[in-house]
Length: 459
Image (cartoon, rainbow, N blue to C red; front, side, top):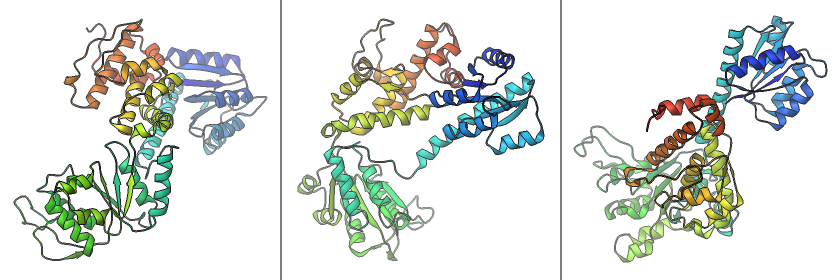
Protein backbone atom coordinates (compact mmCIF):
# COMPACT_ATOMS: atom_id res chain seq x y z
CA UNK A 1 0.00 0.00 0.00
CA UNK A 2 1.49 3.35 -1.07
CA UNK A 3 2.11 5.80 1.78
CA UNK A 4 1.46 9.50 1.09
CA UNK A 5 2.28 12.57 3.20
CA UNK A 6 0.23 15.79 2.86
CA UNK A 7 1.87 19.04 4.01
CA UNK A 8 -0.59 21.96 4.00
CA UNK A 9 -1.54 24.63 6.57
CA UNK A 10 -5.21 24.61 5.54
CA UNK A 11 -7.16 21.96 7.46
CA UNK A 12 -9.96 21.88 4.86
CA UNK A 13 -7.52 21.07 2.04
CA UNK A 14 -5.80 18.38 4.14
CA UNK A 15 -9.11 16.75 5.01
CA UNK A 16 -10.32 16.85 1.40
CA UNK A 17 -7.11 15.32 0.04
CA UNK A 18 -7.07 12.68 2.78
CA UNK A 19 -10.67 11.59 2.02
CA UNK A 20 -9.96 11.34 -1.71
CA UNK A 21 -6.74 9.39 -1.31
CA UNK A 22 -7.95 7.07 1.44
CA UNK A 23 -10.97 6.25 -0.71
CA UNK A 24 -8.44 5.05 -3.31
CA UNK A 25 -6.88 2.82 -0.61
CA UNK A 26 -3.73 4.89 -0.10
CA UNK A 27 -2.27 5.21 3.39
CA UNK A 28 -2.25 8.92 4.24
CA UNK A 29 -0.62 11.09 6.89
CA UNK A 30 -0.90 14.89 7.08
CA UNK A 31 0.81 17.75 8.87
CA UNK A 32 0.16 21.51 8.93
CA UNK A 33 3.68 22.88 8.52
CA UNK A 34 6.88 22.22 6.58
CA UNK A 35 9.26 21.94 9.56
CA UNK A 36 7.36 19.03 11.09
CA UNK A 37 6.81 17.65 7.60
CA UNK A 38 10.56 17.41 7.02
CA UNK A 39 10.94 15.62 10.35
CA UNK A 40 8.34 13.05 9.26
CA UNK A 41 10.18 12.57 5.96
CA UNK A 42 13.39 11.87 7.89
CA UNK A 43 11.75 9.30 10.15
CA UNK A 44 9.38 7.51 7.77
CA UNK A 45 9.37 5.97 4.31
CA UNK A 46 6.84 7.76 2.11
CA UNK A 47 6.10 6.97 -1.53
CA UNK A 48 4.85 10.48 -2.31
CA UNK A 49 4.52 13.96 -0.76
CA UNK A 50 1.79 16.49 -1.59
CA UNK A 51 3.08 19.89 -0.44
CA UNK A 52 1.50 23.35 -0.37
CA UNK A 53 3.73 26.17 -1.62
CA UNK A 54 2.49 29.08 0.50
CA UNK A 55 2.81 28.19 4.21
CA UNK A 56 3.60 30.37 7.20
CA UNK A 57 6.40 28.59 9.11
CA UNK A 58 8.33 27.33 6.06
CA UNK A 59 7.77 27.98 2.38
CA UNK A 60 6.84 24.91 0.32
CA UNK A 61 9.76 25.47 -2.05
CA UNK A 62 12.13 25.22 0.92
CA UNK A 63 10.41 22.01 1.99
CA UNK A 64 10.87 20.65 -1.54
CA UNK A 65 14.59 21.49 -1.60
CA UNK A 66 15.29 20.12 1.90
CA UNK A 67 13.09 17.06 1.36
CA UNK A 68 14.97 16.05 -1.78
CA UNK A 69 18.25 16.33 0.12
CA UNK A 70 16.89 13.92 2.74
CA UNK A 71 15.25 11.54 0.23
CA UNK A 72 16.51 12.31 -3.31
CA UNK A 73 14.13 9.86 -5.01
CA UNK A 74 10.96 10.92 -3.17
CA UNK A 75 8.36 12.36 -5.62
CA UNK A 76 6.85 15.75 -4.64
CA UNK A 77 3.61 17.15 -6.06
CA UNK A 78 3.37 20.87 -5.27
CA UNK A 79 -0.02 22.51 -4.66
CA UNK A 80 -0.86 26.22 -4.69
CA UNK A 81 -3.90 28.48 -4.73
CA UNK A 82 -1.86 31.07 -6.64
CA UNK A 83 -0.77 28.92 -9.53
CA UNK A 84 1.21 30.59 -12.30
CA UNK A 85 3.40 29.27 -15.08
CA UNK A 86 6.44 30.80 -13.37
CA UNK A 87 5.66 29.00 -10.12
CA UNK A 88 5.19 25.68 -11.89
CA UNK A 89 8.49 26.10 -13.77
CA UNK A 90 10.34 26.98 -10.56
CA UNK A 91 8.91 23.93 -8.78
CA UNK A 92 9.91 21.72 -11.70
CA UNK A 93 13.45 23.11 -11.71
CA UNK A 94 13.78 22.38 -8.00
CA UNK A 95 12.84 18.73 -8.63
CA UNK A 96 9.05 18.56 -8.16
CA UNK A 97 7.28 15.80 -10.07
CA UNK A 98 4.31 18.02 -10.93
CA UNK A 99 2.32 21.12 -9.94
CA UNK A 100 -1.42 21.29 -9.20
CA UNK A 101 -3.57 24.40 -8.61
CA UNK A 102 -6.12 24.73 -5.79
CA UNK A 103 -8.84 23.63 -5.66
CA UNK A 104 -7.49 20.43 -7.21
CA UNK A 105 -9.41 18.76 -10.02
CA UNK A 106 -10.22 15.21 -8.81
CA UNK A 107 -9.30 13.37 -12.01
CA UNK A 108 -6.13 15.42 -12.54
CA UNK A 109 -5.09 14.81 -8.93
CA UNK A 110 -5.55 11.03 -9.06
CA UNK A 111 -3.80 10.67 -12.42
CA UNK A 112 -0.87 12.77 -11.19
CA UNK A 113 -0.63 10.74 -7.98
CA UNK A 114 -0.64 7.45 -9.90
CA UNK A 115 1.99 8.73 -12.32
CA UNK A 116 4.21 9.94 -9.48
CA UNK A 117 3.96 6.61 -7.69
CA UNK A 118 4.74 4.74 -10.92
CA UNK A 119 7.75 6.97 -11.42
CA UNK A 120 8.94 6.17 -7.88
CA UNK A 121 8.64 2.45 -8.60
CA UNK A 122 10.63 2.87 -11.82
CA UNK A 123 13.39 4.67 -9.93
CA UNK A 124 13.66 1.75 -7.49
CA UNK A 125 13.65 -0.78 -10.33
CA UNK A 126 16.35 1.18 -12.16
CA UNK A 127 18.56 1.14 -9.08
CA UNK A 128 18.07 -2.60 -8.75
CA UNK A 129 19.02 -3.12 -12.40
CA UNK A 130 22.07 -0.89 -12.07
CA UNK A 131 23.17 -2.89 -9.05
CA UNK A 132 22.67 -6.12 -10.98
CA UNK A 133 24.87 -4.98 -13.85
CA UNK A 134 27.46 -3.30 -11.64
CA UNK A 135 30.93 -4.68 -12.14
CA UNK A 136 31.61 -6.72 -9.03
CA UNK A 137 29.83 -7.15 -5.74
CA UNK A 138 32.08 -6.98 -2.66
CA UNK A 139 33.62 -9.98 -0.95
CA UNK A 140 31.76 -9.94 2.35
CA UNK A 141 33.32 -11.19 5.56
CA UNK A 142 35.64 -10.24 8.40
CA UNK A 143 36.85 -13.75 9.23
CA UNK A 144 40.55 -14.60 9.07
CA UNK A 145 40.29 -16.75 5.89
CA UNK A 146 38.46 -14.00 4.01
CA UNK A 147 40.92 -11.34 5.18
CA UNK A 148 43.75 -13.52 3.84
CA UNK A 149 42.00 -13.91 0.46
CA UNK A 150 41.48 -10.14 0.18
CA UNK A 151 45.14 -9.52 0.99
CA UNK A 152 46.24 -12.08 -1.61
CA UNK A 153 44.02 -10.48 -4.27
CA UNK A 154 45.56 -7.06 -3.56
CA UNK A 155 49.07 -8.48 -4.00
CA UNK A 156 48.45 -10.76 -6.98
CA UNK A 157 45.88 -8.90 -9.09
CA UNK A 158 48.24 -6.23 -10.55
CA UNK A 159 50.54 -8.96 -11.89
CA UNK A 160 49.93 -11.32 -14.82
CA UNK A 161 50.55 -14.40 -12.68
CA UNK A 162 48.15 -17.30 -13.33
CA UNK A 163 45.91 -18.16 -10.40
CA UNK A 164 44.22 -21.43 -9.45
CA UNK A 165 41.24 -21.00 -7.14
CA UNK A 166 40.07 -24.05 -5.22
CA UNK A 167 37.01 -24.57 -3.05
CA UNK A 168 33.67 -26.32 -2.78
CA UNK A 169 30.69 -25.52 -5.01
CA UNK A 170 28.95 -22.31 -4.01
CA UNK A 171 31.82 -21.01 -1.88
CA UNK A 172 32.51 -17.91 -4.00
CA UNK A 173 35.33 -18.88 -6.37
CA UNK A 174 33.84 -16.88 -9.25
CA UNK A 175 33.73 -13.73 -7.11
CA UNK A 176 37.42 -14.10 -6.30
CA UNK A 177 38.17 -14.43 -10.03
CA UNK A 178 36.15 -11.30 -10.79
CA UNK A 179 38.08 -9.29 -8.22
CA UNK A 180 41.39 -10.55 -9.57
CA UNK A 181 40.36 -9.11 -12.94
CA UNK A 182 38.84 -5.93 -11.49
CA UNK A 183 42.02 -4.99 -9.62
CA UNK A 184 44.35 -5.99 -12.46
CA UNK A 185 45.95 -3.84 -15.14
CA UNK A 186 43.58 -5.60 -17.58
CA UNK A 187 40.37 -4.37 -15.94
CA UNK A 188 39.42 -2.24 -18.96
CA UNK A 189 39.65 -5.33 -21.21
CA UNK A 190 37.09 -8.16 -21.16
CA UNK A 191 36.72 -10.86 -18.51
CA UNK A 192 35.60 -13.95 -20.43
CA UNK A 193 34.18 -16.87 -18.49
CA UNK A 194 33.84 -20.49 -19.55
CA UNK A 195 32.43 -23.33 -17.45
CA UNK A 196 34.38 -26.39 -18.53
CA UNK A 197 31.92 -28.74 -16.79
CA UNK A 198 28.92 -27.36 -18.71
CA UNK A 199 30.36 -27.96 -22.19
CA UNK A 200 30.40 -31.46 -23.75
CA UNK A 201 33.92 -32.81 -24.19
CA UNK A 202 33.52 -32.92 -28.00
CA UNK A 203 32.73 -29.18 -28.06
CA UNK A 204 35.15 -27.82 -25.48
CA UNK A 205 37.97 -27.27 -27.98
CA UNK A 206 35.68 -25.33 -30.30
CA UNK A 207 34.47 -23.27 -27.34
CA UNK A 208 38.00 -22.41 -26.21
CA UNK A 209 39.83 -22.02 -29.49
CA UNK A 210 37.06 -21.41 -32.03
CA UNK A 211 36.59 -23.21 -35.34
CA UNK A 212 36.71 -22.60 -39.07
CA UNK A 213 33.68 -22.90 -41.33
CA UNK A 214 33.16 -26.51 -42.43
CA UNK A 215 35.57 -27.98 -39.86
CA UNK A 216 32.76 -30.29 -38.69
CA UNK A 217 29.14 -30.98 -39.61
CA UNK A 218 27.47 -28.11 -37.72
CA UNK A 219 30.26 -25.57 -38.32
CA UNK A 220 28.27 -23.44 -40.78
CA UNK A 221 30.39 -20.35 -40.13
CA UNK A 222 33.65 -19.33 -38.51
CA UNK A 223 33.58 -18.95 -34.75
CA UNK A 224 35.90 -16.98 -32.47
CA UNK A 225 36.85 -18.93 -29.33
CA UNK A 226 37.14 -17.78 -25.72
CA UNK A 227 40.93 -17.38 -25.88
CA UNK A 228 40.68 -14.93 -28.76
CA UNK A 229 37.74 -13.10 -27.18
CA UNK A 230 39.72 -12.67 -23.95
CA UNK A 231 42.90 -11.43 -25.65
CA UNK A 232 44.16 -8.41 -23.74
CA UNK A 233 41.98 -9.37 -20.77
CA UNK A 234 41.34 -12.31 -18.47
CA UNK A 235 40.01 -15.80 -19.23
CA UNK A 236 38.28 -17.43 -16.25
CA UNK A 237 38.15 -21.20 -16.72
CA UNK A 238 35.74 -22.56 -14.12
CA UNK A 239 35.68 -26.27 -13.19
CA UNK A 240 38.97 -26.85 -15.00
CA UNK A 241 39.17 -30.32 -13.43
CA UNK A 242 36.37 -31.51 -15.72
CA UNK A 243 38.23 -30.76 -18.94
CA UNK A 244 39.16 -33.63 -21.28
CA UNK A 245 42.83 -34.64 -21.61
CA UNK A 246 42.78 -33.66 -25.28
CA UNK A 247 41.62 -30.14 -24.47
CA UNK A 248 44.13 -29.96 -21.60
CA UNK A 249 46.97 -30.55 -24.06
CA UNK A 250 45.82 -27.65 -26.25
CA UNK A 251 45.36 -25.35 -23.26
CA UNK A 252 48.88 -26.21 -22.10
CA UNK A 253 50.28 -25.29 -25.52
CA UNK A 254 48.33 -22.02 -25.54
CA UNK A 255 49.77 -21.13 -22.13
CA UNK A 256 53.30 -22.07 -23.16
CA UNK A 257 53.39 -20.29 -26.51
CA UNK A 258 50.60 -17.69 -26.23
CA UNK A 259 49.30 -19.03 -29.55
CA UNK A 260 46.15 -20.94 -30.49
CA UNK A 261 44.86 -22.67 -33.61
CA UNK A 262 41.15 -22.84 -34.39
CA UNK A 263 39.57 -26.28 -34.87
CA UNK A 264 39.89 -27.14 -38.58
CA UNK A 265 42.38 -24.32 -39.11
CA UNK A 266 46.12 -24.19 -39.73
CA UNK A 267 46.98 -20.56 -38.96
CA UNK A 268 48.49 -19.82 -35.55
CA UNK A 269 46.90 -16.85 -33.80
CA UNK A 270 48.71 -14.82 -31.13
CA UNK A 271 46.76 -14.31 -27.90
CA UNK A 272 47.57 -12.21 -24.84
CA UNK A 273 45.49 -13.76 -22.06
CA UNK A 274 45.78 -14.00 -18.31
CA UNK A 275 44.23 -17.30 -17.23
CA UNK A 276 42.47 -17.68 -13.88
CA UNK A 277 41.22 -21.22 -13.26
CA UNK A 278 38.95 -22.70 -10.60
CA UNK A 279 37.96 -26.18 -9.50
CA UNK A 280 36.06 -27.96 -6.75
CA UNK A 281 38.21 -31.06 -7.23
CA UNK A 282 41.50 -32.08 -5.63
CA UNK A 283 43.67 -31.83 -8.75
CA UNK A 284 46.58 -33.68 -7.16
CA UNK A 285 44.31 -36.70 -6.70
CA UNK A 286 43.05 -36.24 -10.26
CA UNK A 287 46.68 -36.29 -11.44
CA UNK A 288 47.29 -39.56 -9.57
CA UNK A 289 44.18 -41.03 -11.18
CA UNK A 290 45.42 -40.00 -14.64
CA UNK A 291 42.58 -37.52 -15.21
CA UNK A 292 44.62 -34.31 -15.15
CA UNK A 293 48.01 -33.34 -16.56
CA UNK A 294 50.67 -32.49 -14.00
CA UNK A 295 52.41 -30.03 -16.33
CA UNK A 296 49.15 -28.13 -16.84
CA UNK A 297 48.57 -28.05 -13.09
CA UNK A 298 51.94 -26.40 -12.54
CA UNK A 299 51.25 -23.92 -15.33
CA UNK A 300 47.94 -22.91 -13.79
CA UNK A 301 48.93 -22.85 -10.10
CA UNK A 302 51.52 -20.10 -9.97
CA UNK A 303 49.34 -18.65 -7.22
CA UNK A 304 46.94 -20.83 -5.23
CA UNK A 305 43.89 -19.34 -3.50
CA UNK A 306 41.67 -21.61 -1.45
CA UNK A 307 38.14 -20.37 -0.70
CA UNK A 308 36.94 -21.98 2.55
CA UNK A 309 33.46 -23.50 2.91
CA UNK A 310 30.88 -21.54 4.88
CA UNK A 311 31.22 -23.91 7.83
CA UNK A 312 34.78 -22.62 8.30
CA UNK A 313 33.70 -18.97 8.35
CA UNK A 314 30.47 -18.99 10.36
CA UNK A 315 31.31 -15.60 11.88
CA UNK A 316 30.55 -14.12 8.44
CA UNK A 317 27.02 -15.54 8.27
CA UNK A 318 25.44 -12.50 9.99
CA UNK A 319 27.03 -10.04 7.56
CA UNK A 320 26.18 -12.18 4.54
CA UNK A 321 22.58 -12.67 5.70
CA UNK A 322 22.00 -8.94 6.20
CA UNK A 323 23.42 -8.21 2.75
CA UNK A 324 21.17 -10.82 1.13
CA UNK A 325 18.13 -9.49 3.05
CA UNK A 326 18.68 -5.97 1.68
CA UNK A 327 19.44 -7.15 -1.84
CA UNK A 328 16.50 -9.55 -2.19
CA UNK A 329 13.93 -7.29 -0.49
CA UNK A 330 14.99 -4.44 -2.80
CA UNK A 331 14.59 -6.76 -5.80
CA UNK A 332 11.08 -7.63 -4.62
CA UNK A 333 10.20 -3.97 -3.97
CA UNK A 334 9.43 -4.56 -0.30
CA UNK A 335 10.76 -3.10 2.97
CA UNK A 336 13.86 -4.88 4.25
CA UNK A 337 12.82 -7.56 6.71
CA UNK A 338 14.45 -7.84 10.11
CA UNK A 339 16.02 -10.99 11.50
CA UNK A 340 16.23 -11.90 15.18
CA UNK A 341 19.43 -12.87 16.99
CA UNK A 342 17.95 -16.31 17.59
CA UNK A 343 17.35 -16.74 13.86
CA UNK A 344 20.97 -15.83 13.10
CA UNK A 345 22.20 -18.38 15.61
CA UNK A 346 19.92 -20.98 14.04
CA UNK A 347 21.39 -20.17 10.63
CA UNK A 348 24.91 -20.59 11.99
CA UNK A 349 23.95 -24.06 13.21
CA UNK A 350 23.01 -25.25 9.70
CA UNK A 351 25.37 -27.68 7.87
CA UNK A 352 25.69 -25.47 4.73
CA UNK A 353 26.57 -28.16 2.23
CA UNK A 354 25.78 -25.67 -0.55
CA UNK A 355 27.82 -22.86 1.04
CA UNK A 356 27.07 -19.19 0.22
CA UNK A 357 24.80 -20.09 -2.71
CA UNK A 358 22.66 -22.18 -0.32
CA UNK A 359 22.62 -19.36 2.25
CA UNK A 360 21.34 -16.87 -0.31
CA UNK A 361 18.61 -19.26 -1.44
CA UNK A 362 17.63 -19.88 2.16
CA UNK A 363 17.42 -16.15 2.93
CA UNK A 364 15.19 -15.68 -0.13
CA UNK A 365 12.97 -18.53 1.05
CA UNK A 366 12.71 -16.99 4.54
CA UNK A 367 11.82 -13.59 3.08
CA UNK A 368 8.97 -15.13 1.11
CA UNK A 369 7.58 -17.36 3.85
CA UNK A 370 8.17 -15.27 7.00
CA UNK A 371 6.40 -12.21 8.39
CA UNK A 372 8.05 -8.83 9.01
CA UNK A 373 10.69 -10.27 11.34
CA UNK A 374 12.41 -13.59 10.59
CA UNK A 375 12.47 -15.64 13.79
CA UNK A 376 14.30 -18.71 15.03
CA UNK A 377 11.13 -20.74 14.50
CA UNK A 378 11.01 -19.58 10.87
CA UNK A 379 14.54 -20.85 10.30
CA UNK A 380 13.71 -24.19 11.89
CA UNK A 381 10.50 -24.50 9.88
CA UNK A 382 11.67 -23.34 6.46
CA UNK A 383 15.44 -23.89 6.38
CA UNK A 384 15.12 -27.46 5.12
CA UNK A 385 12.11 -27.86 2.79
CA UNK A 386 12.41 -31.64 2.83
CA UNK A 387 12.07 -31.79 6.61
CA UNK A 388 8.60 -31.99 8.25
CA UNK A 389 7.28 -28.55 9.14
CA UNK A 390 5.77 -28.12 12.59
CA UNK A 391 2.18 -26.91 12.94
CA UNK A 392 1.66 -23.33 14.12
CA UNK A 393 -1.16 -21.80 16.14
CA UNK A 394 -2.78 -20.56 12.93
CA UNK A 395 -2.52 -23.61 10.74
CA UNK A 396 -0.66 -26.86 10.41
CA UNK A 397 1.68 -26.96 7.45
CA UNK A 398 0.46 -29.36 4.77
CA UNK A 399 2.65 -32.21 3.65
CA UNK A 400 4.22 -31.38 0.29
CA UNK A 401 5.78 -33.67 -2.28
CA UNK A 402 9.05 -31.84 -2.93
CA UNK A 403 9.91 -34.20 -5.77
CA UNK A 404 7.46 -32.25 -7.94
CA UNK A 405 9.83 -29.27 -8.11
CA UNK A 406 12.44 -29.33 -10.86
CA UNK A 407 14.45 -26.46 -9.34
CA UNK A 408 14.39 -23.88 -6.58
CA UNK A 409 12.52 -21.35 -8.73
CA UNK A 410 9.61 -23.80 -9.03
CA UNK A 411 9.58 -24.31 -5.27
CA UNK A 412 9.80 -20.55 -4.67
CA UNK A 413 6.80 -19.89 -6.94
CA UNK A 414 4.84 -22.63 -5.18
CA UNK A 415 5.70 -21.29 -1.72
CA UNK A 416 4.91 -17.70 -2.67
CA UNK A 417 1.55 -18.72 -4.14
CA UNK A 418 0.58 -20.69 -1.02
CA UNK A 419 1.70 -17.88 1.30
CA UNK A 420 -0.25 -15.20 -0.57
CA UNK A 421 -3.31 -17.46 -0.76
CA UNK A 422 -3.12 -18.10 3.00
CA UNK A 423 -2.86 -14.39 3.80
CA UNK A 424 -5.73 -13.46 1.46
CA UNK A 425 -7.98 -16.05 3.03
CA UNK A 426 -6.96 -14.94 6.52
CA UNK A 427 -7.95 -11.35 5.62
CA UNK A 428 -11.17 -12.43 3.91
CA UNK A 429 -9.70 -11.46 0.53
CA UNK A 430 -9.25 -7.83 1.51
CA UNK A 431 -6.44 -6.99 -0.92
CA UNK A 432 -5.46 -3.70 0.71
CA UNK A 433 -5.21 -5.25 4.16
CA UNK A 434 -3.28 -8.23 2.82
CA UNK A 435 -0.81 -6.00 0.97
CA UNK A 436 -0.21 -4.08 4.17
CA UNK A 437 0.08 -7.32 6.14
CA UNK A 438 2.86 -8.70 3.93
CA UNK A 439 4.52 -5.33 3.27
CA UNK A 440 4.16 -5.02 -0.50
CA UNK A 441 2.38 -2.48 -2.68
CA UNK A 442 -1.20 -3.24 -3.57
CA UNK A 443 -0.36 -3.15 -7.29
CA UNK A 444 2.36 -5.78 -6.71
CA UNK A 445 -0.12 -8.00 -4.89
CA UNK A 446 -2.64 -7.73 -7.73
CA UNK A 447 0.16 -8.80 -10.11
CA UNK A 448 0.93 -11.81 -7.93
CA UNK A 449 -2.76 -12.78 -7.76
CA UNK A 450 -2.96 -12.63 -11.54
CA UNK A 451 0.36 -14.45 -12.00
CA UNK A 452 -0.70 -17.40 -9.85
CA UNK A 453 -4.34 -17.42 -10.97
CA UNK A 454 -5.64 -17.08 -7.41
CA UNK A 455 -9.42 -16.93 -7.04
CA UNK A 456 -11.63 -16.46 -4.02
CA UNK A 457 -13.15 -19.68 -2.75
CA UNK A 458 -10.76 -22.03 -4.57
CA UNK A 459 -9.73 -25.12 -2.67
